[in-house]
Length: 138
Image (cartoon, rainbow, N blue to C red; front, side, top):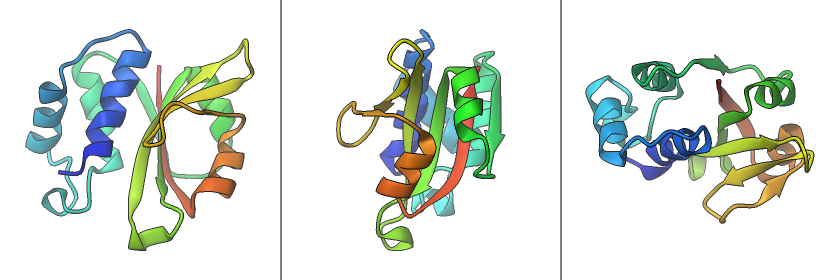
């Protein structure tokens, strides 16, 4: 299993003030058909609804690249799934973002540390080769 899928879930739980042990997240994903090709292609974006529901957290999943900022800002926390810069050759990636209304930007838990981004659209355009899904966490 690739790490970014369960790590994004762990970071999202952390961002909403909940602690769920990584082993519990991994076990849930693995035992509930949450892996793509037995994990060789990572985690399915569709597992997050059931994963968060298991811990009584509501989610909204979208696979359309419209009104992402509006949804993420209303939810406060979201998991963003996108194609890496060179597309399918290096696969997809998951990150957790949290809206900071006071600073008018998002904090992003990412492979490059914890940077900030102003809009999801700008990030997708400048840093990725395409949107896959977003899971808003309420």
